Image (cartoon, rainbow, N blue to C red; front, side):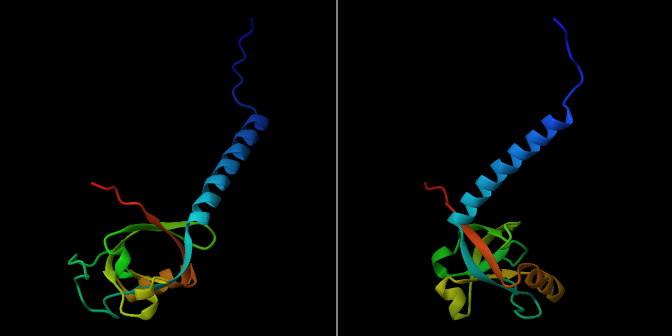
Length: 136
C-alpha cells in the first residue's frame, strides 16, 4: 500500500472553492429572501445633537431609529449587492413618516463625514432582516 503525501492538487482546490461558493450563494439567497428592502438614512451629532435615544440609551455606533414596533429589536443589514453591512439595534424611533411607518431605517453615525460615507456606500437602500429575540 502506497502512501501519497502530495497534498491537494489544483483540481481539488478548485472543486473545494466551487462547492464553498455554491453553499455561500444558497445561504445568502435564503437570507436576502427573508430580508426586506428599505430606505437607508443616517443621523449624526451635526444633524441631531441629542445624546440619548428614545429607549434611554446613549447614542453610539450600531444604533438605528426605526418604527416603534421594532424598538429594542436587532437587525442584520446588508447592502443591495448582498454585502453584510452590520448588526444594528433599534434603540431609537424616527421623526419622519418613513421611519415611523417602517420603510426607512435611520442609522446613527459619529460624524457627518461618516454619515456621508455610509450614504454613499448604501446608495440609500439596504436589505434588513430582523433577528428573532429569545423569549423568556
